[in-house]
Image 1 (cartoon, one colour):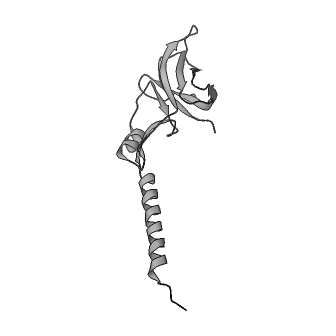
Image 2 (cartoon, helix red, strand yellow; image 1 turned 90 degrees about the vertical axis):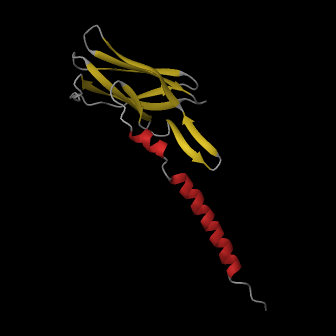
Image 3 (spheres, rainbow, N blue to C red; image 1 turned 60 degrees about the vertical axis):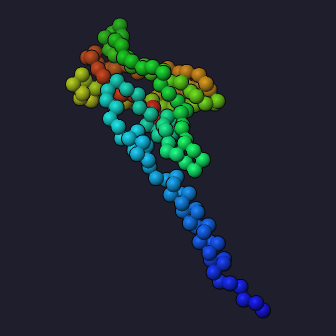
Length: 155
């Protein structure tokens, strides 16, 4: 009976574990760019994609850079209605080959930057494959307002 070398299977297993750890470690860390995108101050009168993988640049992976742009905002704004309230609109563009179900909500702020007492509500919207859809939300009061629209994947 010949004895098998003890170190050969263990060396092979250690190499596999080290390779797996390196791949996992490379993919799970947050790059400086990702951190900036997640924490930057966007100010008022903006559209935020609160689900990170809807519209972001990711760091380089093992096979090159990963850019994920599923949805973009092609335009947004606020206007006064005939009754004196404010209406926010956002046009969303779907860059995928399938319909995308999202939710959006508007946070209204006074011109001084104080949040209004109206509680924002998530509203569902379907953006057709390679198409556009418009989200609209009206304010409750008649004062001049600023806004931040948040967009996320449907939960």
